[in-house]
Length: 332
Picture 1 (cartoon, rainbow, N blue to C red):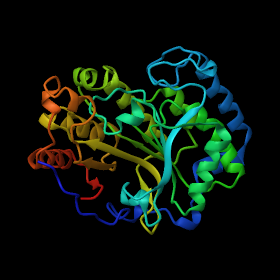
Picture 2 (cartoon, helix red, strand yellow):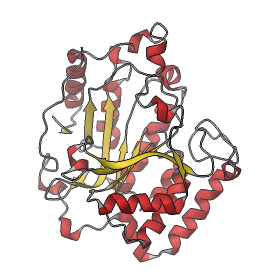
Picture 3 (tube, helix red, strand yellow):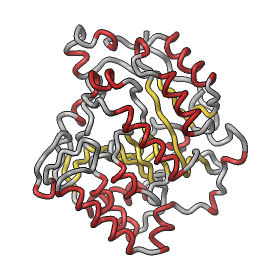
Picture 4 (cartoon, rainbow, N blue to C red):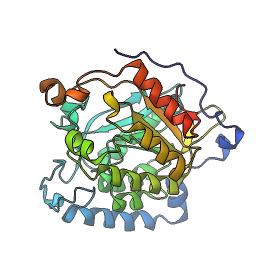
């Protein structure tokens, strides 16, 4: 049975005024770093491009030379492919505000989710190849349209390209928060490059069980990588904080998609967030799973996830999160 959209609450005030940053005093992390010492960006850009020579940008460690347009699992080469860029009004309320979240959707992906709802982008790579200047231009265009942030969607495999583009965008006047919207299959190399640059980390913690990660994403090490990545993201930015108007400014926002038959391991993920990250973690427990991609083509092979979730499965996940002491929920 398909689920309806949950009712929204005003973001920012769950947990009290301690999660509010006065908008007048907020400066994006990358801008502080740039004003402190702009040469840091050049140093990180060089380190990032070095990762492409024998690519270890993501945990796949394909070791191909992407500077020469060799392709590994993600199928990306020297430059980033962008499928679309626009003010997104379907993101979390704290991101979209009134004017939308400035989303830049990158083509290709380092995961192979058999249920992917963006199969044409992640598997087939529909999009346009852009250099650093063009990517920076997109950021400025989105900011000029009134977007509250720049939202990099599926950036795990294009961190070096971001490191090239962000300083160009800063020189052109970029001033809004940067959102790193990821599957959580990120390398520590990349996250260390992003330290002090990203304002909001938004990982989608997908699976707890290694076997399910192998079957449904072709990444058996995903749970271990995701846990390490989330720890590092929280170390960098802490719990999610908002402006007085409820616009997210800085911190960690965890997404979790509830799956049929408890295949995602929701209870274990929430226990981990509560015990090892923080009970103050902002969590969006998502109900919109539907079979797509390879699952639609081979439903018998993926029988456990060949249907939408039941209301009881979603409610169980919410109860689990609350039972572990989590209390800052999106759209509840």
